[in-house]
Structures are given as C-alpha cells and as structure tokens.
Length: 172
Image 1 (cartoon, rainbow, N blue to C red):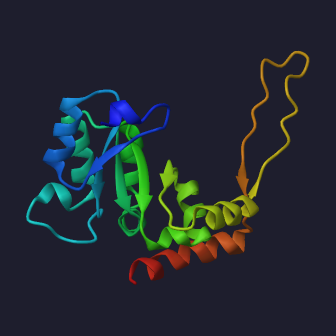
Image 2: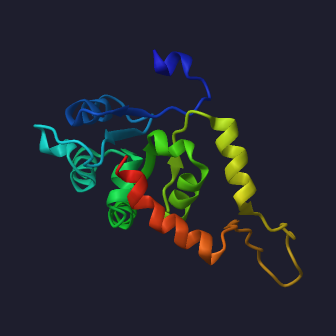
C-alpha cells in the first residue's frame, strides 16, 4: 500500500516493538526503519526497550537506520548521542518538550537530526529566530566552495541557563 501511494513523499517506518521494526526492515528495503524508544524514561519487561544503548543494539542487529527517542531520554543520557552517531544511525526525538523552542535548539547543538513537534509552524519560526544564517557569498575566485553554516544565537549566559534547565525539564 505504501509503495503504491507514497509517490515522492518521504516515508519512515517506526515501531516501539523491536521485533516488529526488524521484521519491517526484512520485508522491504525501500524505506528507512527506525526504532521508537522511551530512552529509559519507563521500564519494560523487554530490556531492548529500556535504554538508548539497547536501542543502538536493536538497530545494529536489525539493519535499522535510526532511533526515535522520547526527548527526556536523550536529555537524561546526552552521552548516548555521540555513540548513536558513531554507529552511523540517525536520531530523532519526540515528546512535549519538543514544543519548547529552547529544547529544540539544545537538541540541534547536541547533534540530533530531527524533532517531532505538535506545532510545526510555531516551533519552526521560533527556532529560526534563534539561528543566524550567514549570507552565502557563492564561489569566490580561487576558492573551491564557500561553506554556509548556521549558528545558534545564544549568549553564554543563555546557554548556561539552558544547560541548567535541562535537569529541571526532564523531571516533569
């Protein structure tokens, strides 16, 4: 059904159940498959669902392309982000905190690939207001290419505040 109707739309399959995610991967290789996890914010009988480290194992064993974690799980274990990246997996997040622009910006700084939000337009605009995008000057004589990067517009004081705020946010 997806193959018939997806057309050119980007599609990602995902499941909270490790076996289901791995089965979807075995059944097709057209679309990426991600493992959904609470990132350790809840405990389940199936230990594969209880941490970002276990999520990495599920993805590596099943040939999955990435992890979608509850944002509190990522904020509670920021050291897992580099391990996920080293494993060549994508990392997305979901959760109520993703409706807070500062939390989304913090994830950008951490290297998270994408966020799932309830208020796409509002969060997009708020995050855009926090990002400085230098003008791309194009190719200069003698330069192979100029690189355009975006920088978050935070003062040291604001960044310090955000880092202190994270433990408070993940407790609620």
